[in-house]
Image (cartoon, rainbow, N blue to C red; front, side, top):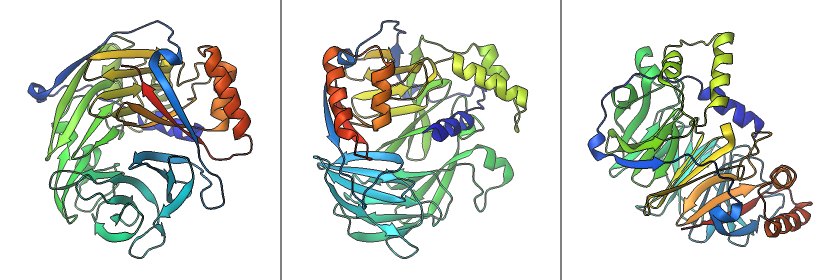
Amino acid sequence: MALRFTMLVLAFAIISCNKKETKENVAGSIKITFNTANLLYEDVFKKTLIIPLETNSNCLISKISQMKIYKNKIFILDINLNALLVFNMEGRFLNRIGSVGKGPGEYIRPRYFFISEKDGLVKVFDAPMKKLICFDIEGKYNKDITVDKYLSNVGETNSGYWGYCADRINDGINSKQQRTLKFFIFDSEGQLKGHISGRENIDNINLSNAYILNDMGESVSFVEPFSPDIYYLKNGEISVKYKIDYSGFSPPQSVLSKVGNMKAPISKMGMEFLNTITYEYASFFINFLENENWILLSTPFKTRTIIYNKIEKKSTEFSNIFWSNKERKPYFYPCCIEDDNLICYAGYDDIKRELSINNQISIGRKKKLESLVAEMKNNDNPVVLICTMND
């Protein structure tokens, strides 16, 4: 996790402050008032279901990159194992979807997966082979779809797929486009329909591939560090979806201008400057989750997490429930929001850290976590936490 955190900080380091016109006529407004109150876990979540995952030689989890609950099954993508694992809601291992190889229905390195709202297929994106491998919900192979571009993420649109470019070299993309090109649009057969250059479409585009994505069915939403406005890609266009009025720690324009004018490669002095401001300001979000009712933004800097109820138009901002202020490491890792439930995972060491550091634990919760730690001693797999949010 430390390596993952370091890579995120480096990836998010450069951000430009050039302002462009955006389609704000479609944007909603989210007002988040900075709250200094120290909330307990029970003030934010009304109940938590804890599911210990089975441990055996076929499902020993190494590093979770994605997790989703669908039709009473828990899907977990492990990027170290190169495997998509499936568990039931009691935590019992059911099966793997796909296998490592170069043939039909096989992948070398599964980078991302989603479950299609159109056909119910589980679609796994393999980055090296540049293809989507499609399976039914039981794991039976259906078909491959070749997208023929180097991508970090792939998702669905109304008429095909979107792809997120991680500033890798792609055929037919010149060096100037390479710096700004982020999204591709494909048809249902994976044929390229066009690309979207973010610099021409959204505010504060940065040069460092620092988007945080959220798959929303037929579209994709994303945020950028230091600019927590939520953008929206749909049918080949990017617009501002929500303008966020955040009264917490925000860098002044003079600081953003200095960052925006920095050139790559970054000097040692420049890197020290970036590290200083990222640890000082809590608008440097590195987690973003969204569904129809909720939005979550989280940052290790100031250890702050924001949960916004889109129906009630009410935000709850808190610290130290997910993040250790002392170590700037998370106790729990939020993965997705299903209905009114925040789905997280945590390992033995993560829960031990919360018990030893976090002073915002009620007596009842502390007893539950101590009992859980005792059960987990011989279990190398993490636990899944389904945290039901307060209205």
